[in-house]
Length: 435
Ligand SMILES: [Zn+2]
Image (cartoon, rainbow, N blue to C red; front, side):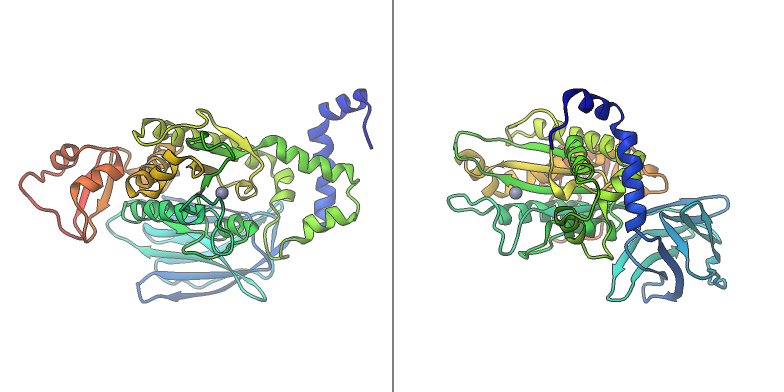
């Protein structure tokens, strides 16, 4: 049915409230509240304490640490307490308590002293979801600290080759860039990369952003390489999920009068019931979603800034692009998609087939991510506590000139900052890099 222009204008003006109202009712009917219960605490071989809670399905979580008194807070949206959570003390844990604040369950882990903590993550089992938090008492730190989790999504894979060039496949290029980025993040103090696709396997598009949520990602970077029928088209671009696309999704739902039309049902029914429904959540948690879009744009701008400085890469689009890329649709994890170039263009294909060209893309993403966290520091992370430089752990086979390229600094910068003149580097050594 086509709406007449006047009605369309009124609808546009009140669209947000209209959709919010209807879709909230729609979603609340569909979405029963999640339930959380405490499972156990155990000590791992590493000395870390592992605290496990059980959920019915994947939850929208906000977790943070506070000092004085030391504690970690986990807020679970749209979740009830299944049975009273009480746990005896297990040093350095004083007490685990939980309370319901509106539709949110707040779990507080009271601590003796500061801990290194890993951002909680969710593991899906047949009959339940485990919500896991790992902590370790660390007497050397004076505040609770954790790593920043960067989800790296190598586009395509397995039976899906992506764009096909003369002698290169997109899925191979994206994995190599992803691994290069993983390597830099892995050895840089304060960052923890998680690979959405670790090797040449097929990963469903929905699983990609769902897995980022399960892994507790602080942000999500999807890596791709384009192809076009005109071989002259070349260069890199960076995309953010389109606001319009989300409105279209909402409008489609409203047009269908939120009934059980097969189209709506297939959209909803596509995901496992234990997965998280980003489409429904986008309307319910509008503020979180808007903040995510703003953050994604900043992240995209920071990566673009670096790509423009990269001597190898030409830009296809100089500004942030917007598109309805499904992998970017998480409602609260800043997400960008980097098109590293066109493998249908001979220059780009040559650049991406070579290590130096791929390394530059990985470097631009890394520096973009790092500069993003300078603007938007996450409290209680190593990055927020070390703003002037990063610490990098030398790996077997590392040479100073290569490290300099990966971090976008000069060899002299590294030598001078670390007093390395006439000294060799060795595996396990920690050097400082000013970026
Ligand atoms: Zn692609």
